[in-house]
Amino acid sequence: MFDNRTHTVAFLALVTGAVAMGFSPIFVRLADVGPFASAFWRVALALPPLWLWQKLAAEPAVTASRPFRKAVVLSGLFFTGDLIFWHLSILHTTVANATLLATMAPVWVFLVSALVFGHRLRRAELAGLAACLTGGGLLIRDSFEFAPERITGDLEALATSLFFGLYILAVTSARKYGGPARITFLSTAVTAACLLGAALIREGNILPATPGGWLVLIGLAFISQAAGQGLLAYALGRLPVAFSSLVVFLEAVAAAVLAWILFLERLGPWQWLGGFLVLFGIWLARPAARAKAGDAPVVDRA
Image 1 (cartoon, helix red, strand yellow):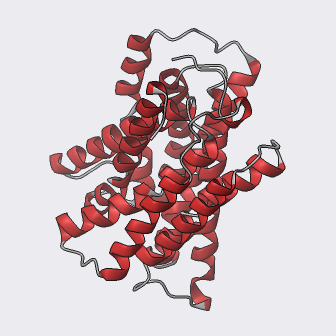
Image 2: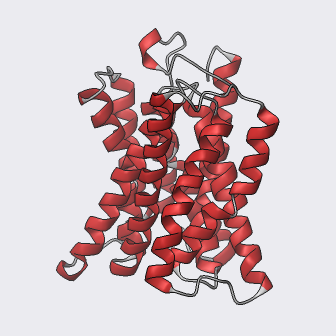
């Protein structure tokens, strides 16, 4: 897909990370704790492997850099907002509505990149966004519905997409100054501190009741958080942010396929077409063979 081996590795990392994040709703469904508790344990239990990764990576110590600290703290706060509003939306609207509206994150990335940072968006990226949004809509076509009593949950799902889009942009900014291991560890630590208070206030008892419950949460932390978010941070230092945000659509595709395999949830022709359109949109938006200097993050520390 790319003429550069580094870009190819980054793309494969991005795809793998998106698939890993696609396991998240599966683990949340299997967890025997409340949604806020599962969100907390997702990040808290991911800290040990992320700490080990950043120690082994031996990345340059740039934590004294003010722009780096600001970007990392913001990424942690934005991801906190993403998880909180995601779980609230699941409680207040249908899963289909929450899923569709949460996939709007690339729209926010495109808008902020163009209007705030002045990035030029290629026609291929805009066409890819249109294809991915259409595909995402088809994935949940049979179960999406609008009802006035669910408007609060729908708005919370839309807020989820905004916070995740801002998280992607914050990590992209942090990658100009530091490596993915340090960024993911520190950002996750910020999110864990915030979510601990939210989980205790909202649910009180946050401990799993069984050993199996702990295993589910460990899977959520190691696969969806440590691997998924870590690979995303790695790729965001090497690929254009607009394109990277589109590949995250694969998370929805992976979740649908996993639910089909594990829970026998039927995938009809429209869902398969939706998955194809997501893949086609990503292919359309792929970086040009020789990207201009301003199209992608310039500095890479890993």
